[in-house]
Amino acid sequence: VRFEFSSNDGSSWISVSSSVDANTGQVSWVVPAGVTTKTAVVRMLDIQTGDEMARSGNFKVLTGNVDILDPMSKFMPGTIERVRWTTDITNFDLQYSLNGGVTWMDAAKGVQAAKGWFDWTVPMANTLEAKLRAILVNDADMEYDRTINFTIGNPTSVGQAKGEGFTITEVTPNPLMKNGIVKVMNSVPQSVSVSLMNSIGQTVEIFHNEMMLGIGEHSISFDVRSLPNGTYYLRVASGDVSKTQTLVIQR
Figure (cartoon, rainbow, N blue to C red):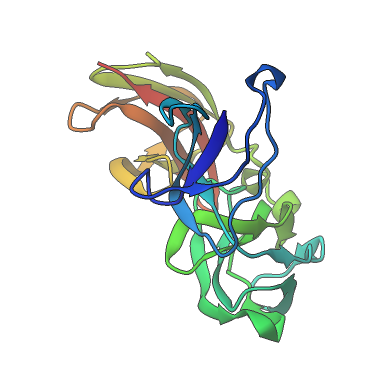
């Protein structure tokens, strides 16, 4: 057998191997230089007839590298901090997250990569789960690199910011078809918002906004009948703190 690679979901092909003994069960090949795509695919051909015997599913290929140097363990809100990296590409978008990478916001668009640094204004927040990442310009699905979690502000000085203010105790049913209930346990009186995000972190539905809840467990209902099947993230937020639970809509 031999193998071919396509960067455009099979519209065109290039050979990436010579004849291979099928009994070995594997082959080493090199991704063609300069390819960036979300629709790469590899296929196996009979060396004698040229017939296609098997084809992979689509996979991503991202050319180039960005290595963001892990930041200091703690930044203070509102300060300007220098983010540094090494790279072999021209530009990228820099994003930050305050919840461990569940959702992302732009820090800078079209960063000139060769400069090697960017002065970032740290957002006004308190969190233990801040991250930075580099992505392909205007394409959040194509990620070069992300940092480990770091701290912004003084979350340990505020019970709510430590995640002690509330917990998600249960989401039922899951999977669900129409209506669901999320149970939230409050250790202090506070307002919470409940929303739903898709698989890339975009908010697709806001069920409750700034609902005041007292101490104890509360059952909060929500309706997903207007949304298509898929995997989502149910988000419960209060102040600068948010917590998420994977939710599957299946009919």
